[in-house]
Image (tube, rainbow, N blue to C red):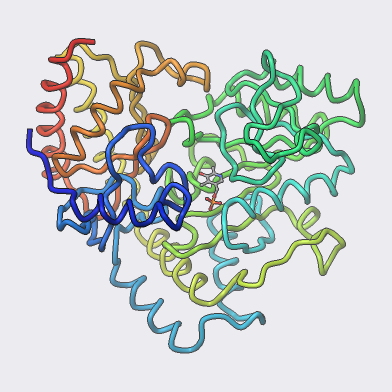
Length: 439
Ligand SMILES: *Cc1c(COP(=O)(O)O)cnc(C)c1O
């Protein structure tokens, strides 16, 4: 097996660990669940990453989704540089914000107004506050395995059994902060109904249901169409605000994210990742009736020093315009994603390993799992040890997959069939190596 030199990254990681907890500023970057040292990245170039030891990797992480045009896209780069020369941030309104808002509104159905923030975490947190104000109810429902950022009330895991009030999934989150969050099972409408009943028995009922319509944070697990349609119906019937968290899937699974697959619009939609073209941007939007409650038009407080800053707005604007003008991009990326996942599945099968694969536009996932994955419980039955070996093997051959079985992979513009086929032939070598360990 070809082992790359990682000496510089090892030194960089050790040095980082002395001044940054775990050496990283977001946990999965530390490679804890797959082992090995995370390459420290020097620069990117289209679909490639180059690390501090000058190893080159084909990058299926793409900064966890935002970079649908790959690294150093010339048009995004140019507009960012041009904008920077006029000032980084003003804390005052600019026309760029209106332009980006109009762009999103033209792409997504059911959105009249939108507000920009600086991360997906802020977007979901603010959307929930708005939904609570709108319904004058406190309880919310989230699904096990869906991730909506790291705000306190969303860091919950299901208690004993599903359809219960959640308990904090991280130390530092008081029980009191999660006591309004109920946890339901993904793709299971009955568990949602139970949550609604429980909430009604205790109080005023549910303010909002938040979900990733195409879940990408337990591996890639899309909602079933009937499930999402039933959920929409149930929410309408009960006066519950349906929040579609499209921070990952928005402008990624298709131009209009999950809407293209389900025809379900939601009452509020949250965005992040691609919407900033690689700069830190989040957003949430919906009907005027709800959005007008936001301060200063209404009384629901929400703010941000760097929200809507011109550099981030202009990067997002170019990214969305390029996507809107080249809608065929999604088909092209999807074909490559299918070539990759079908290829991996077939090769693995030759070595007696079962993969469950999934593709939605430029998003892809593969589970080392005997059975189909429809929810978090199913996902957890995956063979994470085998995934870790596969991940390490591929990394040593210059293929950078997300460092966890429970993440989504991304195809970017600039990848092509030849690259995918090279990845597949490397995968064959790796499966040969790990297959030989016996399972
Ligand atoms: C990434 C992500 C978030 C959090 O966004 P940040 O910008 O990391 O705060 C929220 N929801 C979903 C679905 C995500 O994928």
